[in-house]
Length: 405
Image (cartoon, rainbow, N blue to C red; front, top):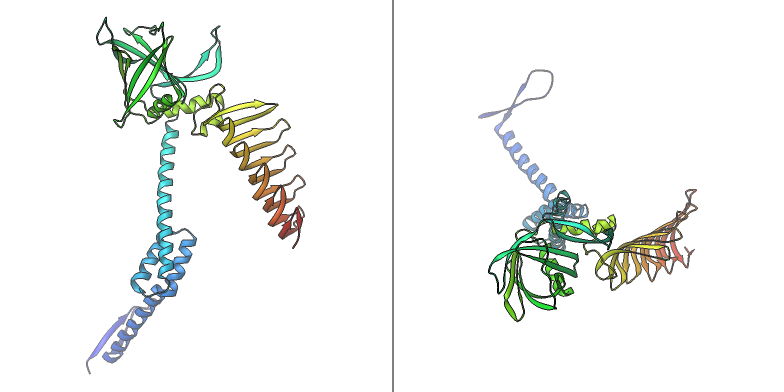
């Protein structure tokens, strides 16, 4: 009988040894080898194992691994009863991946913004002065150098123009126009209305109106907001203005790059209080506390944060006269989700409703006790865990501040 030779290298200290087997034995080994491959493949891609991998990787947020296992399950076990559940997982994975990609992009943009935080482009933040030239607490945003343009009237055509933009807030925008590129703004001796066309960086034309008051053109709240938003978008912003009833009297100028205006807005808020720079809302100016970020002190209490309709609304910090402090969310002047720290060191982190602890929250007491769980009307109420300084832990149901079981 023809004999086949199979040489195997055995990892011993002795020299390699040659093992001689028959053709029949060789064929048996081939069959066994094929069976073992199938068994390995079954262990590797068996239905139960793939399901376990899907659930494990999904639970650990290893979405790439979960997706690969779902794909294998569909290809190898298309009749699996688990397919519907796998598709639900896949749908959630796609949502999570989309959200994660968005988060990564937001973090990239935020990192880029922070890296350029001190770059305010053509803009700077200044403070108004009083009648004696003393700096006040009221700030505004303006352009560093004049913006150039042209003006025409009955006496001249296309003469040089300098423009100063004064922005107190998103609701108060003024233009100062310096004819013949001079240093003194044109003054009005009567109240004139101007039609204004603005073209933003997307090429969209927006029609506004302004009133000539003393040495400046002033815009109403709505139109000021539109200008403010155009500047926040950056890029080139163009303006054309003419006096209503006398179109021969007109002005035109272009902001070649309004970029980094948002950084100037942050700088303006930092002048009020550093923590306000985190808010996306514009700074509050004067007594206007609506859709803005600002500070107010009353009766020894100080609030620093966001406002809506003259009420604390959004993110903010209240420091009380007695030493207590609340940091977090406000809804119509009432605490939402946040942290309250008492002057004696006690602290509550969690949900609030109607000014009281309601919902899930964690309270650390001055005596060292700690409660984690549900609250209702300032009392421990619902499922919770109470830990004592000596290591004793009570876990279960609480009713009106008392442990039930």
